[in-house]
Amino acid sequence: MLWERGYFERFSMLDKLQRKYFREALKEYRFTPNEIVVLLFLYNNAPVMDTASDIVRYRGISKGLVARSVESLCARGYLEAARDPDDRRIVHLKLKGEKNSIGPELEKKREDFCRRIEEGISGEDLEITGRTLRALTENVERLLKGESEDEQQE
Image 1 (cartoon, one colour):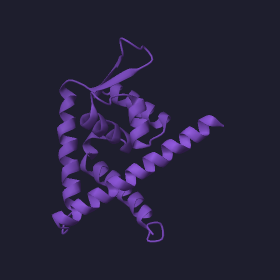
Image 2 (image 1 turned 60 degrees about the horizontal axis):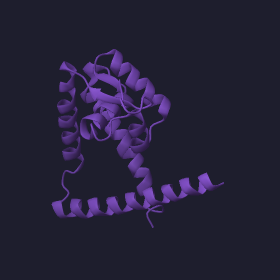
Image 3 (image 1 turned 45 degrees about the vertical axis):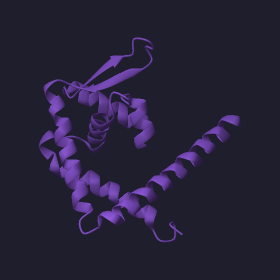
């Protein structure tokens, strides 16, 4: 059983390692760990998913931390925010102008991080792990959706 073998604790360790890696690799920018998450998320997902709500939902970061990070990144010129013309409640986020070049740099650092943690693992094992993690994620999403529906019915 996964729980008994400590797998979930290792996921937490992996997240901590990734945050530490990015903090050190990008220290000259003085980004907070959550600012890096916001920038990477938008670089990889915009314009399909480009709102603070998307980041909260898919990255599991609190609304307050995402809002603070977005505000800081906008003030520093890395992001711009624009209201949706069809629904003024929605604010779309976009990597901005010259500072937009941070996206490819973040992606390069992410690829380097992945290469380092995958070192010594065969392509076949990585493929199996990927399939297994996708199945686990689908189960978690299904269960969370079921919990949300149960909570709404109460």
